[in-house]
Image (cartoon, rainbow, N blue to C red; front, top):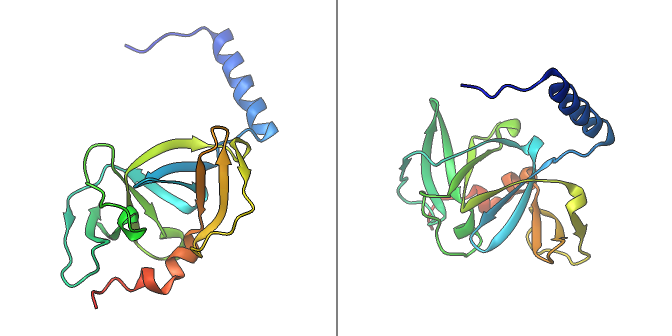
Length: 169
């Protein structure tokens, strides 16, 4: 049975949500963890985040290429994002998630990540001046607890030659 709320509560909640939308207090970033690294991705660059379905291994690929996933009849190439960054492999169970990226760019790619950490706001972070050696990192940020977060630039990642070359040598 659904919880009943009064019209007054409903109107107050709606007015609060409309005020937040006008002032720009949106949470436009998705936080996730890949190995021991904290990442942020713009919500506009994500397709969906879901528990990993069974993965079909692909022979003669690099270890970080986890295989193929069938998501509602569409095949996605799955990259273990932690292993791609030389962290231990991600187990596709428990808190692990499959983050669909690249659909906007015509690429059916999914990142296997350790866990999703929820929605974040730009205001929750301060930019760090240091340059990151990975070209797919658009910014390095610090949260209020001093933890480092890397903002993922999906088009740069999808265009990076080593990311595109998943074939084993």
